[in-house]
Structure formats: structure tokens, C-alpha cells
Amino acid sequence: MKILSLNEFLSPMFNQLPTAGVDAYVVRHSDHVEMHDEMHPFYEYLRNYPAVSITSDMLGARECIRAINNGYLFQPIQDSVFKRIISVWREKGFTEALRFAASADSEHVTKVIHWIAVKLTWALDSMEKGIFQREALPTIGSGSIADIVPTRDWNTSIVRCISWHPHCTRLAVATRDDRIRIFSEGISGIPILRHSAQKFVYQLSWSPYAGRVLAAACHIGVLIWTIELGAASNMLSHAVLLKRRNHSPVTSVAWHPQGNILVSCSPNDSNMIVWDVSKEEGVPLKRVGGGGLCFVHWSFCGSRLFSATCRNIFRVWRSGTPTPWYAERWTVPSGRIAAACFGPDLALIFASSDDPVIFSLPLQENIFDTKSSFDEINVAYPLINLAEVTFTSDVNEDSITVGGRIVAMEWDPSGRYLAVLFHKSPLIALILTRISNLGKAVEVKPFCFIQGLSGEVPNCINFYKKYPSTDSIVCLTIAWSSGRIQHFPISNNYVMSDDGWY
Image (cartoon, rainbow, N blue to C red; front, side, top):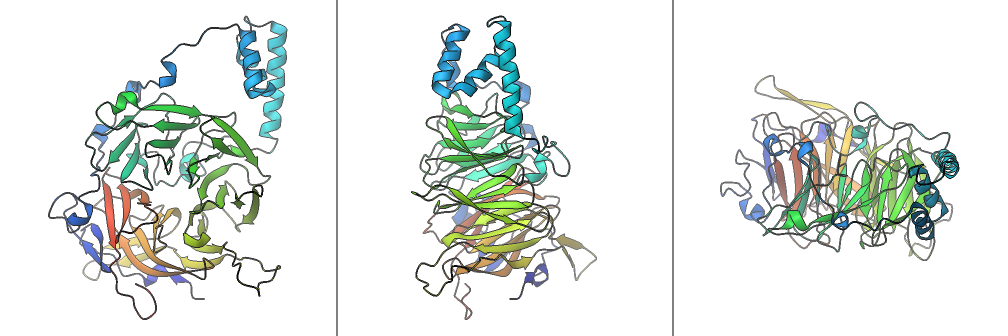
């Protein structure tokens, strides 16, 4: 099988015009970047999408953040420490009661009990953390927390992450000032979510069948927001904090497609936590090897869960019922998994941090294939090599380098388009994909490059995951370094070619 490369892409434009969208397989460029301007070439497609632009002047100072959780509006009755210890024991077990006693003031409990609780808590933490557990990751630099999140230049970017709701036109935008803004179709007010625990937002995830429930992966835990839209939204929206010992920072959260459970992970914790959000309880899932976890992704059907460790190990969990959860373990030669995506029919693609090659790993089992052997082993195969390529202008000496280390990948839910974000390149690579043989084969074809205004680089990307979608337009949303958020439409009105590509 031939492995494609960036050399087979058409050269990007050197006229400094940003890429506006794709219409009938033709890439359009335009200097009209305001999507609600009638001069925009895709105005008729984008007029119902929320217009978003975040500038540095709009970012508030962290010292001004004064958010109130509704859970703090009522003061609890001050029972004695011993009554509270017994209450915690009954509700959460002996371990949590022991930790509560260790954190209490020694004057409120006897010094002997406090000393014993502190020593036993230290022993439990040592056993839980493990001798070989990695130390806390730094916040900047190579191998840091900012280095493993799917956002380019996370520390300095105005927009740190974005997330579309899967079933309605609602976009969540987290910015550098630790605030989350909600943009919705047909609603003029923009709720701004603030919370004292909302520091360093790494990822956002909407609950699929709850239009106003949003999970935010933060430095100390997971915030579950219930958002009130409208004029009084900032006062009525409230959040619940989910956290566990040694499970921070939380760099990734993912809702099950049915919306009944939430999974979170941390690079400092080898446990993946499966949360029952309604009960505010979490169950740890642990496997030996690989250290902490970088990110998790659900398949569209919810039967598989991808988890990437901070080392060269990744796992694909089977979460089907009534059988218990179990994981298939895989490794890459070096580095770690930098990005991964699920497509239709359990198609899975991934790329490592050390090798800019996208691989495909078939997971679907063909139950009608009677010739399959029980000894058959699935093998990941390369799809496209995205090593750096430099394009030069035919008119002058201008040049653009594209490719290299991959930061993030986003796969359109229809399985037709793959967007790739690079660590240094100012362009986004858009690749045509096709899935065949019930997800066992993925084919790719070069499509185009997406470029912004002069001086802009892309920070994060997200497809509008309205799945299944009956619209003829697929939308890729891009947050640029200037704070401009672009909706990039791709028209599906293609004529099928002789080789089966649209």
C-alpha cells in the first residue's frame, strides 16, 4: 500500500488571503473574514452560526473572578468533628473518614487520634501513588502539561479550547482568563462561566442529551456546569466540582455517547476515573504500565474507549454490557500517542509524538466473516506521512513549511474529512478519508491546506459534531492566535469520481 505524503498536496496560496471554505471541491479564499458580512463567500451557510471573536482586551483579570457556587448559598449546620467523621464513614467509607480526621484541626480531635490519622493517611497515599509513579509534570516546556493537551501554544493562546455541542448549535469557548463563554444560535446573551476552582481549563465536553450540561477539565478536578441561558444566565448558572486525591490536574474529560457516565484522566494518576455525575461518585479503573494518562476518547457507538498514557502505551477499552470492562494494550515504538480519533464503524486512527505518521487500527469484528481465524491479529498500518515539507512560491522567494509533529487531529463524524494541527506549521492540513469494509480499511487522499490572516497560527480545532448529520455542510471551527474564531464550511455537494471519491 502506497503511503501518501504532504508532497502530494497542492501548494498553498502565497497571496496572504485566508482560506474561507470549500465549495464543490473548490477551495475558496477571501479577505472578508466576518462570517455575517454579506460579502463573505459562504454567508448563506454561516449566517446561523454564532459569530465569535475574543480579543486580549476582553480577558478579565483573575483577581476579579468572583463566582458563587449555588451549593455555598446555604451554610451547613456545625456538628462536632466526631459526628462529621462518623457521617463521612457511613457515606464514603473508612478511608475517606480517616482522611477527614487527618485534615481536621488537632484541637478538635485528640492529638493521638490526629497523629494516627495523619500517619495512616500518609501510608495510604504512598501505596496509592506507588513507588514508580511519575512526579508531577511541569506547567511549561517539553513534556509539560501544556505539551500534552490538544492546543498549540496553550500557555499563551487567547483561546485555550473549544467544544461544539453534538446535537445543537452551541459552542463553548475557554479563554486564558479561566472563563468559559457560551455562544448559542438565536440567543443574544453570552453566559460567562466563572468559578474559584476553574483554573487552567484543559478541555471541554458537552453532555450529549443535556443541552446545558458542560464538563470542564481543570487543574484541581472536573467542573460540571449546569448553564442557564438568557439575561440572568451569569447569576443562575452553577457548577459541581468532582475531584479525587492524586487525580490532578485533569487534562481530559469525555462523556459516553449516551450521556450517562463521564470519564476523566490525569497525567499524574494511572487511574482513569469513571464518574456517576448524578451521585458525584467516581470508580477508578487502573492498569499497570504507562504511568499517568494524557487523554481519553469514546467511539461514536460507546462500545470502545481510547486511553493514551504519558509513555508509549495506549489502551482500547471494551465497555459493552453485560461483560465487564477490559482493555487491549498496544504500544508505539517511541514517544507517546499525540492524537487519536474514532470514526464511523469503529475506525480508529492515531499518531505518536515522535513520528508524524498517521496510523489506522481496525477494531470492528465482522460477525458474518466465517473464514476469519481466531489467531488473526489486528495490525496498525500507516496511512499518510506528515513529515515537514517546504513549499516555495513561483513568483518570489516566499516559502511555507507544513507538517511535522502533530498536536491534534479532528475527524468529521461522517468519516469524510480529517483536520490535522501541527506544532509549528501555520497551516492546517485537511485530508479526505474513506472508510470501507465495516471499518477495517481507511483510505486517505490529499485535499487542501487552511491558512489564516497574515501572522495568525491555529491554536485549536473542533468539527461541528452534529451526528448523524443530514446537512450538506460540514463545519470545522478554528481558533486562531489572534482570538478570531473561524467557521470553515465544507460543502458535500460533490460529484462522485470514477474511483469512488467525491
